[in-house]
Image (tube, rainbow, N blue to C red; front, side, top):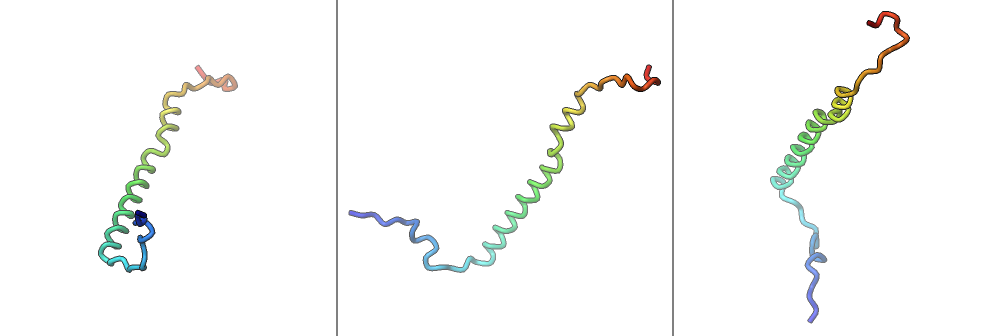
Length: 67
């Protein structure tokens, strides 16, 4: 007894996606993209900022005005 592969039936025959479902999916994708961009905006330089905050400055021996 041979079983049919259900994945071979996916997309056959071609069917049009309902417009309301397509709009909902595209809106969800746009929301996720916006969230990723906002997250990237606030966290892209987080490691670099922490590193520069805790990095100690070396004294400049070439400047005669340092105390």
